[in-house]
Image (cartoon, rainbow, N blue to C red; front, side):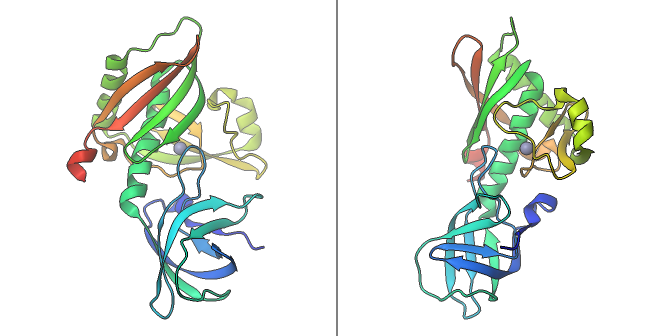
Length: 244
Ligand SMILES: [Zn+2]
């Protein structure tokens, strides 16, 4: 099956596009290109709507990757309207939800730059995210200090940019790989790195905001002990109630 062009990768602020149906199987729909981010790296899959040529609206309740990673699967809720290969659809993501994920996801990158240890897991929800660290020997985490560092960096509004490196260069820089659980997508000759100013650089295929100021104020609600060296840090968008 043809690979789906992942528009969200180069254009994370793109909210809508017209796309052609390549395959439909029950409630699973594949398109030639998409702005819908598929679940991965701790970030949930996008939701949104599709409009058929006759005006019928269908809901996308989740987005996943195919087993081989080439196709992006849009999961539809049951509804009227026949969808067929070749059909051109208007597609729109739930931007309010996705933008929160982008803000929190970028916040987790930033947070990891302040913690001396490896990332052992991460998960984002709508208003808060969590990240697990295996701390370096003797390292301690202070909630207030971490929260201060986060908000100071956000206030400085550092740019978030994308760099590319060759697979070989990444092999020479093992310090770039901070996570146990998600291997960077090597094997395509080059790897996408997300840079936060001078603060952080790590491989990631997810969606991020373009400057830290967009994240807004952050609160660390809890740091939990998960074993002798493992800590779970829970971060919230402190203004999410104001925005809603
Ligand atoms: Zn990322």
